[in-house]
Image (cartoon, rainbow, N blue to C red):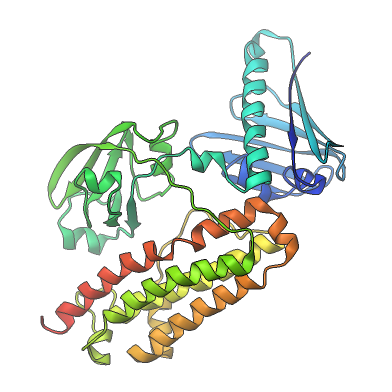
Length: 400
């Protein structure tokens, strides 16, 4: 047997380092894209990365804040192996050491060095997440500057595209790579960087895996019936400064929300409730149903935050889709422009109040705190994108 070893000193409490190997939410924040674990001997351990790599196994030993041992069997390994992680308090932080023995057999040639490199890279990210909250996989990932939208049979017919699988754009972000490449609302992406783009959101990060800001990729898309190809330069990802003070975070977010809410509310100036409830095109949302979507977004924010604070993030198989029945129900319960806009503001107020009451224990969990904070500090990206959708829905409803 030959052992691949890696270690790193993390300036964070020992309990958070231990949790990073025994909690599904924590594992997703530094190691993999999907995790489901049951942290007790013989308890399951399944880890998945965007692409086609995964590992399944189970825990063998757990000594809280001291040692974790688990069975590792990835889809590209000849057989299962075992990984031992030890935690030691040192210099005011935590020394994390990983040992991964592999057999000295022909089928395992080169695996030892691959494991060592991969664990060393992952531990660097663990250090970043626990010390600063920043996931280097995201910080180093380029941006496209797009707003992916639903892509239904009805939408395909309405915009005249000949395909039924791909990613329809709700819009593009000003100044980012997609806009500069000429992409626009209702374009349907079908290929990027030589890889297919489908309705599955995960096809997008898979297509730019290994790329960085400044790299160029070929993008294939449909604009109506016409198939086009452009070269897009990937934008560098700006990482927001998230204040590690809940009251300050809520205050900073409020400033951003205020501008976005004002833009949404202004869209309804001069329109009647009947116009706001009218559907511009059959099976397309009314203006108030778009507001319902924004309300549901805030409700999801609160549910998401509860999962992070509790340590059990709600996870789904993908991002799901917008459910028309839910949007209709919210409008029926609040059947006017005034009521819907008031409900939206109440939902935002509840999100901001929740943030201001966050406990100190969660504040110390920098990976989860920063992850939520980054989303909270860009509400205008969502609100502004849907403000245009509201304007588009209102104009035909008013006969303009």
